[in-house]
Length: 167
Image (cartoon, rainbow, N blue to C red; front, side):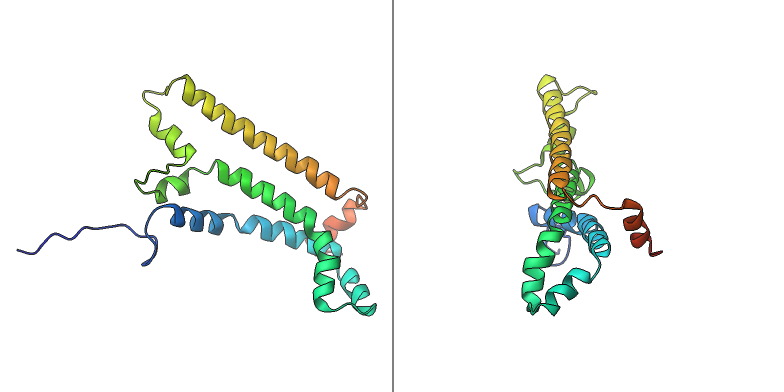
């Protein structure tokens, strides 16, 4: 009689369930937000800043570091806040890829402790704290984005037509 093999579920061959699988899934799921936001910012900037810096003798790394980085910082900040507020409450990916390890994410813990619709006042308070924290992070992100882009409030219709490819 053959010995029973222990079956383990894996995300990929070398990666089993647990923290690494959760991180990979969340990064894969949320990488589109920064890509879209930074791409939209690059489209609204145009190439004139890069060309002007190159005409003044800046090397490619200087153009990226001294010209593009300060102009892209608001978009990177806004996308980081958006991704963080999405990841903090993401339940489905984390629940599907978590193992029975000791580091259970908060959203999975709250869900698993609900019995009969009420997990008690401590879980209700914890859920409320997570919700309020998401709102606070979103508000901080909005204020930070407005602060980082002060003085850039130009013609918004022109920016939208540029993004749409009509300009």
